[in-house]
Image (cartoon, rainbow, N blue to C red; front, side):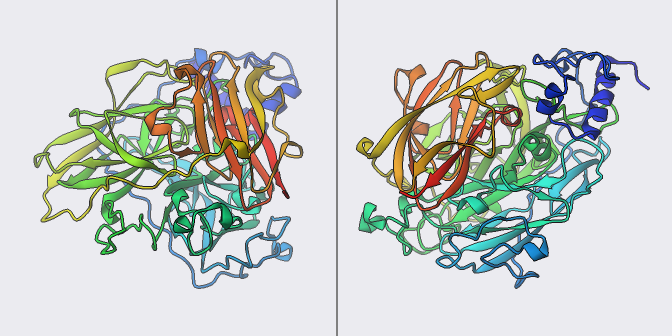
Amino acid sequence: MSHRPVDRYISFMRELQRARLSRRELISLGLLSGTGAFLAGQGFLRQARAKDLDFASPPTRPWIEELPIPPVKQPNPAISPMPQKEPNVAADEVRSVAHQGWDRFRPTAFYEIHTREALHSFHRDLPPSAIWGHDGIFPGPTFHAYYTKPIVVRFRNELPPDHVGFGIPEDITHLHNAHTPWESDGGPFEWAPSGNFRDMHYPNVHAGFSVPNTIPAEFQDDDGGDSRETLSTLFYHNHRPDFTGPNAYKGLLGFYLLFDPHGHDTGEETDTNPEAFRLPSGAFDVPLLFADKVFDADGQLFFDSFNLDGLLGDKFTVNGKVQPFMRVARRKYRFRLLNSGPARFYQFFLSNGQRFIQITNDGNFLPRPVSVESVPVSVAERMDVIIDFSSANIGDEIFLVNRLEQVDGRGPTGKLVSPGTPILKFVVERSVPNDPSRVPDFFYEVPPINLAEAARTRVWKFERTNGAWAVNGEFFDPDTSMADVRQNGAEIWVLQNNSGGWMHPIHMHLEECRILSRKSLGGAVPLTEQGRKDIVVLGHGEEVRIFMRFRDWLGKYAMHCHNITHEDHAMMLRWDVVPG
């Protein structure tokens, strides 16, 4: 057995993880202090804090692995038993209420995801590691979904109930950024134990369909929703409270791409409809999931469940491979950048100095494309960018580089380092006869805000207390709503970071917000944040005012920090949409 402190810590941590205790439970048992040090007694040895140890994964060679592209999930003609409006308790479905939108938005396609343990190769210089994956792969399969085409996705939990290692084999899957009824939102409620399933009904509908009189006729879709609020790049991930961090880190997440076949973002670069955006599509529309990882001395994936700040890895994976390369043609590509965490922020540059054309922020199109030198991406943010390789030469190698300094899970230092860490290599290998794709000058008008609609203003203080994180002094309680908001109403929320040296990417379920002001910028809002967002980054001492609507659906929703260590311990709150 190794005598290195870091190896003893990893061994000790794995023994604790066998008990499947959350950090809050360890504190309540008196086995863990509020500062994160393990206490003597009860058979436990005093351990060094994880941040004081030198975690170093085994060496790996960059640019050996080719970038994998997650497969597109295909629907089933039927699944057994067939999904239904009411919970199918007799068949072991975990759901307490009927699907709200079932009668109006009847599903047109059915999917079945099998959540399984499997072996995954992050790099050929490392042995395969056990992961948890939707359909047994990491990332999980990509969904291509379409407005006006509601679907049902059945998530079957086939994780081993007697598993060894970090994580807990209980699944509830959140469709992040979707306008979805709460019983299919996949928030931190009603998770499925191993052997059970849950049917998620995704209406794939624009917000505002229940109040079409509030939307100008030229922007109403066939269901009455607001076409100006078309979403694009979403993702799904495990949301089991107290264990979201280890479960997602272990592989339980994937892309959900939403297209508008009768609108603008149709997903076809050769679309003859003059209204179509004709953005790069097919093989030239590439999802990129970024996740930093740590491996032990034996090359096995490791997660420190009790790191106070948030885990930082020293291996950078893209779509599940460490520092891969991608062969590209001399033409435009749409890259969908997703930072899956758990705690690292990125700021991406291209090594040749070329600029990005940013077209989205989170799942929402910007009003217009913006030329940017770099793309900052906090945890759970998505940024769609266009990179045009048409000016490159055959054989050129261009690197996607992270230059943002971050030394612990508290957040980045704000410094840009040079040359930075190359994450992904593009190899320009061929020319194409023509490139039919384009980047339009304009995407969607942003719906106007009428502050008079706001029924009230609420202040949410994101704080550190008793060695953990809280909102307005309270830890997350799934049985208690901290705010009852009126269906189809609006409010102003004030998000304050009172936690000291930590940064927090805050996520709101159900609806996107509009940022009204940032205190750190004297009230100004950056150009790339002037659209709709579902992640609001709170820097040190930051205060952000946002405008929120709560349309269409009723039920239980969440707001939380998406540094998933903070979320698990326990910077999250429940809020309910109640009848107006």
